[in-house]
Length: 78
Image 1 (cartoon, rainbow, N blue to C red):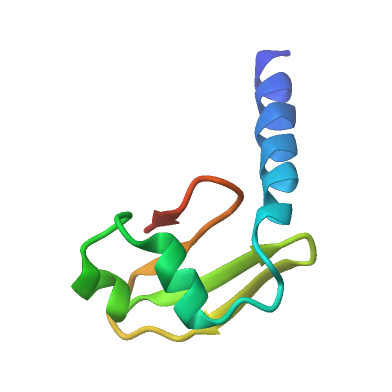
Image 2 (cartoon, rainbow, N blue to C red):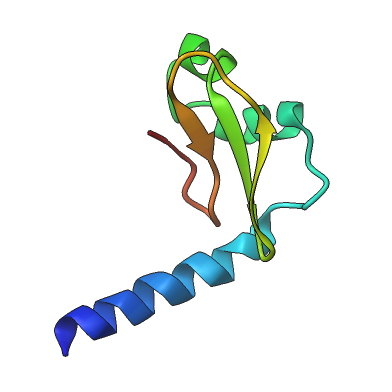
C-alpha cells in the first residue's frame, strides 16, 4: 500500500509542476532557471530538457554526458 501511495504522490507532484515552465522557453531561458543547480561549466555543455504537460523535449544537445531540466519547482542535473 505504501509504495502505491508514494507513486501517486510523486506522480501528482511531477504533473502539477510541469505548468511552471513555458513550452516556448529557449535554451537561454532554461539556463537562467538552472543557475546554481550545477557549476556553470557543467551547465554550458549539458543537454537541456524542457518538461511540460506534453512530455519532455530536448531544447539543446549537450557534449558532456549531463542532462539538466526543471520539472516543476525542482531544477536538477544528472
